[in-house]
Length: 76
Length: 322
Image (cartoon, rainbow over all chains, first blue to last red; front, side, top):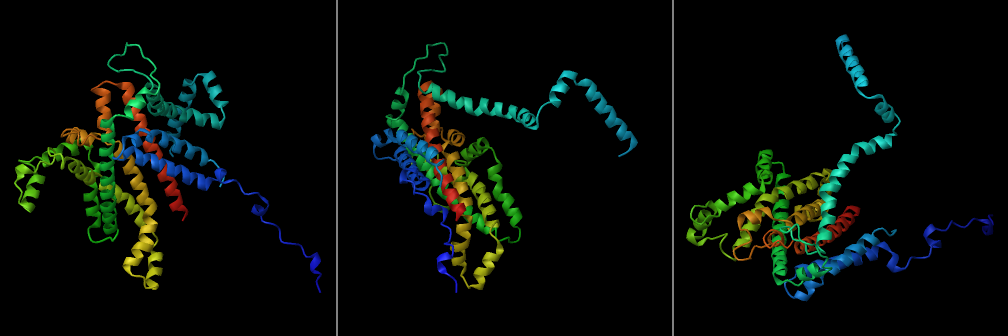
């Protein structure tokens, strides 16, 4: 009969030991946020409803674009 | 190789060795492979920097100044964000953005639907499909200047074939079909021409996507008794989607910059109904000679297109990973 106390435990998966990164350092959600900001800026630039939205479209687009350029370098 | 060939080759090599100055030859021999590779691509990089990158940075610099190209000797002053503020608060420029959006939306929608439809038909490989493919591709091969000019003749109310055909089908007198002179019809006149010219391009990309779908997937679907409709929505469309998105991306970016065809067909008129952003930009730069302000306008458009390209590249990667 095998002594189960001496059977080696299965090795832990690499992810199990690692602490999960905070959401603002994760590529997936931050990229999605950057794309949403770019999309918003794009709609603001071409919408026909309010001049004030058009005025702030460039800064929104720039924010989204720079954010995308930065967060797309984050690890998965 | 004959003896005479050897002789000629040896003679040519000897001549080359004699012609190369000894210090240069020694220096070239001492270069690493990496250095030689850099030596070969350096002219291209220099050209790219001079033609693409430098003008971009120069436009960014000009966008913060009051520079006017028709007064090259005037003192150039820094105006900070003044040009951007004027561009982003100008109702006329805002209107030109809306015209651009209208134009881009309809051209892309029509080109994608018609282009994919044509690709789907051509992919059936019916009798004479190669001939029809060539025929459909012809508009894409023409210069936009040529297309703009001959569509202007086609749209002529008195002598134009387009007006005649519409009149024949609807009974409206040809003199009333003012495609380029009517404020409601002029934007559609440009959309029709752009769709006519660039649908083959979308078709070609979609056709590449359709041809890349392996036959065994359809065979498996037929074994499972999937209907044609089901096969279309569950196999054809998802597998051709990256290609369709690529076509939409290319056409979207191109249409935001559309200038030549609009300039030839309507010149932005009647009034300013077809004044797309690039036409407004050209007027600002070369009619009002507000070079600094027009540079700021160009940078705004560049940021918009760059942002759009980011979104599409991300979407494309996601679709490819599926």
